Image 1 (cartoon, rainbow, N blue to C red):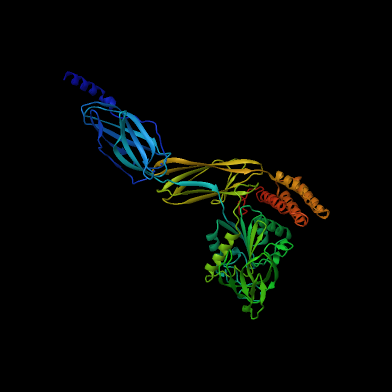
Image 2: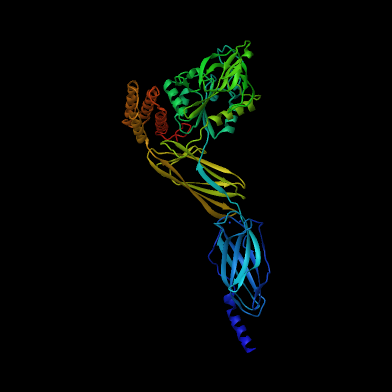
Length: 615
């Protein structure tokens, strides 16, 4: 009895020291279930009596990276001091029954008493899902026993990705006789007639409001220009990935036609309606840009186009208004639609591409170098109206999707505008995103949302996100004319319901392997290595001379850039006439250099946005 009294006295003195478990180091990883805690009283058999316990989670749902605490309570129903056993909190993936984390500590519980404490750890290594939690005790002589269970959830926070984007930015030339919108009244759009036209009703203006609606639904952005000078300028803008020409009112100067041809040969997609007679010289010999030869204008101003299965059409018919052209397709050109000449009061049977038709090609698809070209031999713009809107809109959307070429995300040229897409999605609650982009001074960023250049690093801004909303922040990096690897460092932090979540971090690397000088030197070396006939050697030497003139010129001013562009085009013109060697690869190298100098011209001081406005 005296001995038991002494034991009880010692236990009473130790009680304050034994009330709780200190926090301890984590062992962590991922899992599933439904949130909510469950306390239990599962017996744990020990030699001296019984031990029960409960566990509660500090929060039934947390964001990845937040801490989660487990309040553990052990109850000793015996008169004996229980010590020397291990207390464990085990987090389990219920899908796989895999243990993802174990927290443990040596425990001690006084006689007829209890001990409580919190075990805490980060959830940074747990993937979003529901997890099962077990409160266990174990000793050297006994297997672990489960005293209580609970459930908690790691919530899905934002899924953030950042990558080099693939976007369609379309340069549109409305090449008709009607005045640009700023010079005509809105009520007159679609009603004006062309003066002096030999037919009247069909010669109305393009319904630009319908065109804009279709373009807005189809691509990242677009710019409409109304004259050849504006088109020639924006043709040099690296922002635009593809080209649409509607109408045949105005031709292009020969040098601009050459630039257009090389843009397409290097991979820019082009779609044209009617603009062929003004571009007869575009293309070399039997390889014209559109795969067609212009043969004159067809009679009448209402036409039926019979479409056939192709990359951009299904079998069907399309009613067109306005003039139409008679064209002859070269071998290899895909015909996606036919103009039926029986609509004009006469028949002319003809075999073409293995098919017998009383018709002429109306929709033609051609490959040109790395680029694709589509030609409509009827007035697509004028045919846009409320009746044909859906059909014509789908045809234009299909055409744009077909000619657009996905860029090579590993090859970057000086003065290239690289689109970068930062995507934030699947936030299960409203939140504020704090976005920071740190970038090299030599590589400024362009924000199309504001039309502003970002010259000072870091670029920081806040974005309000709605629950379950997806946001794409697109910006562009202007590649410098210097070899090297340029890194854009992105950090996205979130504040949701007053809680600051761990930030997302990523890097985008843009590597420039060669500057303009090195590209020029490589082309000269390739030309010197060509094994050609004596006749073609003169053309090779002329191309080399053009490039050497470009090499020795002072770069940077618009006048010098203009001369560089013309020298490169002269070199291209010389090598495409070579017959004794394959020069396709050298032509593409020249086109790369041409893109560099076009970009240098376009972005020469003062700094301008993608629409040509001074910043």
